[in-house]
Length: 128
Image (cartoon, helix red, strand yellow):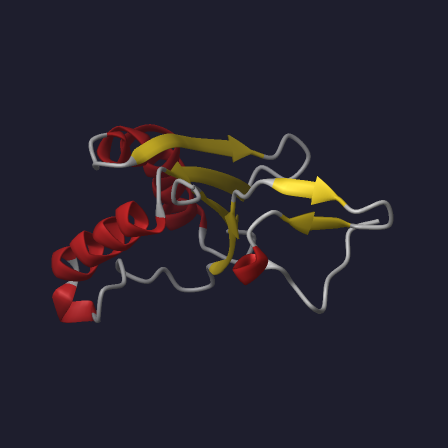
């Protein structure tokens, strides 16, 4: 079985960031970030969406070919921002959250959806 892909969802709320800093962050997110990440090995998709109803809310999705590819990307970011413990410069008031998902093959047991790979089955989440 091939290593599962990794999907990353990033939610960015700039509603409490001062105007100029928020505008600069939005512009950078909507233009430069995609070009930079597209050059990283293993990055299959990178998209930034700006909310139509809340323009200071962004939703970023990334798809990596494997956990190893994402780890390599993370290590490169850690090196790039080593003086800040791997984190890009912080903007006062910004709120960011992440969710990580691994793609996996599922099968229906007649009652629930479960991973085909026993080692990846959840004992706490059952998909009806």
